[in-house]
Image (cartoon, rainbow, N blue to C red; front, side):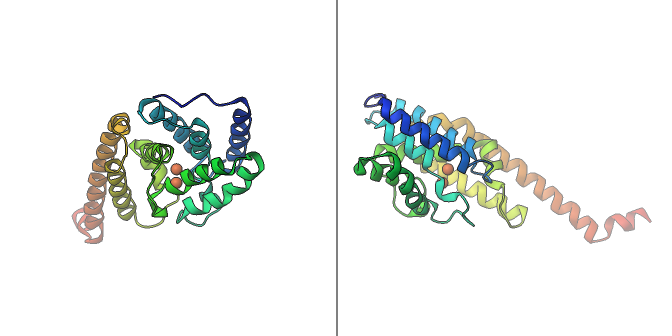
Length: 218
Ligand SMILES: [Fe+2]
Ligand SMILES: [Fe+2]
């Protein structure tokens, strides 16, 4: 199945308005900038084209574009799916008359993250969930995930690696796992390198704090 249909001309106008909206809102947003949103949108379309279930292209595109709107100006990302759906309500009300479609888009936003504690159920929700998880994998995803985090390097890296490996195991579609296999392996390789370097650094720090280096010099 590709899509149920192509976007109608009036839907394209709404999508263009939403693109302009998220472009401004996500501009330079730490970790979740405009490129993240566009990449999740692109991956969503790629997955949707490869699965059997019929997909509403308008719900999928709007949901993917607005999925992280709840992260903007939020002190942390907690419950950003629920916050995002509430924020998206304003723009959806302004451009979309069909309330059922707006609610479907809001459900995509709510259920794209496990933090909302409501798992995705429709194909559009599952596709955006998978696309977002895939975008977090690989070297770029790791770097993006580390940006703006507080804590020691060990804690941040440990947390990121643990979450990324869990992300991969929770992907809904076989095609999503296939698409992200390379990035998943890259995540494992990056985590091994980072952990090795951290262990090396810890032993070097040990040499300094035990005055071994100074004693050897004298
Ligand atoms: Fe998110
Ligand atoms: Fe995201």
